[in-house]
Image 1: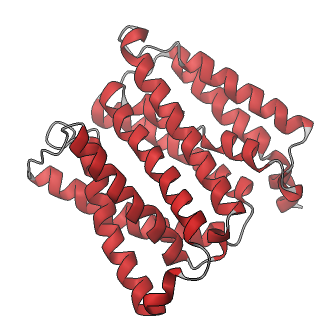
Image 2 (image 1 turned 180 degrees about the vertical axis):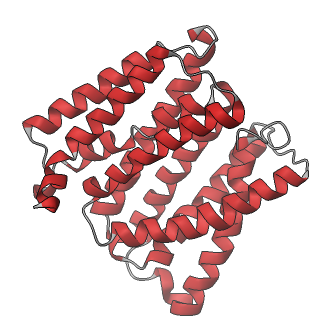
Image 3 (image 1 turned 60 degrees about the horizontal axis):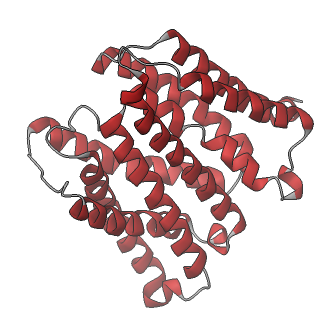
Length: 271
């Protein structure tokens, strides 16, 4: 997204990505359930789920305009912390003392990471970093809605459809309102949009929600630790992002905090 942002704004990339995914999943849902697909009581929580999902990606798109990709990826993937906080009221996911310690470590890491300036004054990045962090909050709350709302019991394709359809509508409206609808169809843009639509918005969402229906949310969010590691590394290699030492330390603290939050489930699984 960051690499082709000069030819198509991140918000517009996301809107186009979700439009393609909405057509795919919408066709699937209608073919399988017909016109009564949304009369099963999942619509209210599905709309809330889609709204939170759309907010997450509005924040992601704007963060990529105002900060580096490496900063955006770390702050976005603070989501497991907000998921754990939101789910603590469920008996099977209630936080223990060590998990609260992990949350404190993660928030300390967020604070330290804000000091990393990636070769630019911190004031040039702080706004984008905060927006990316709001994206993490939105993603965390999206998982809470999925776990506690009735939509969590619906089929995978319907769950994803609620998200990508509302995401497409909201992001198209946002891109139009902020005059970010210009699309220059170069080869890199076409390839980027195809990758985002087919691999990310269709294949990876299918896999993720299939897993969410079968495993504890807090345990699965541990897997998301891999994404900021790959994201920061690829941002440095492909985009030339400079990884400031303070930002690196903060990112490590965030990952350690998330690991501590999920340590008990990992040990139980191992045993």
